[in-house]
Length: 317
Image 1 (cartoon, rainbow, N blue to C red):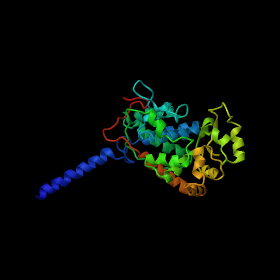
Image 2: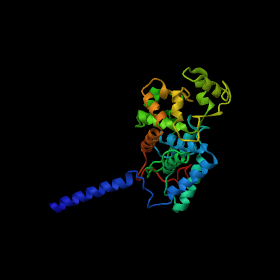
Image 3: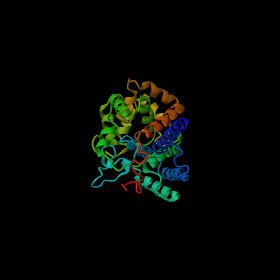
Image 4: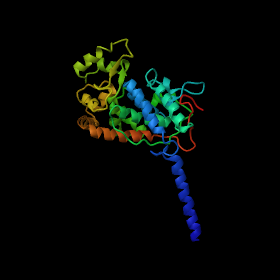
C-alpha cells in the first residue's frame, strides 16, 4: 500500500515538473540550450541603437504591440500572404511600426551562434525590448523566456486591441484591463513614451483643438505639424527622446503631453497621483516599469508544443 502511494506521488510530481518544464516561462530557459543567445541579442541591439538612437524606442514598441494582440507570440512580425492578414498593415502599425530589419539581423546572428533555430522570434522581441531600454540608460529586468511563435496573425485583433493615441482615461483603463493589466501598469508602461517620436497625424487634433495644453508647447508643435499635410512629420514624445528618464511625467503635469492619450493620464482622474509620484521619483518609475514589462511579457505566451520556432521571423515555417 505504501509503495503504491509512493508511486502515485512520484508520478504526480514528475507530471507537475514536466508541466513546468514545457509550459512555464523562465529567465534561464536558454542557459543550457544556447548560452550565447542573450549576449548576441544584446550586441545586435546595442549596435542598432548606436547607429540610430530612435531604434531603441521602435524595438520596445514592437514588443508592446505584439503582446497586445493575442499575446506575446511574434505575430506582429509576419508578412502578408494569402493566408496571413498581417498586423503590419493595422492602423497602429501601418507606416509606423519599424525595426523589423533589426529583428531579422538578431535572428540570423542568434541562429548562427546556437547552431540551429532554437530561440523564438517572440523571445527575441522580449529581450530586444529590455536591451533597448538598457541601451538608453533605463532599468534592466530578468526577461522570462520560453515563448514560441504563432502560426497566424490578425489585423482585426490589432485594430481592436492596440491602444490608440486618441483614447481617454476610461478607454485606456478598459483596454489595459482586457490584457490583465491594471492602472499602475497603464501609467508605468505609458512611461515608455519617455523614448521616441510620434507622427503629426497622431497629435494634430490635440495641438489645434484641445484646451488642456500649454500655449507655448502648442505653438512649438504646430510649427512642424500643419493643420493639413505633413502627416508623417515627427515630434519627440518628451524633451529627451533618446534617454530613459521621468521628464515624460513632468511634461504631463505641465500640460505638455504630446498625445491625447498621454495627457489623459494627468487630467483630474485617478492616475494623477501616480504621474506626480513618477515625475519626482525616477527610481520608483524605473522599478514599476520593469515590473510591468515582466507582467506584459506574460500575456498569453505559446509554450510547450503550441506554436513553433520560426526559421524566418517574417513567415510561418
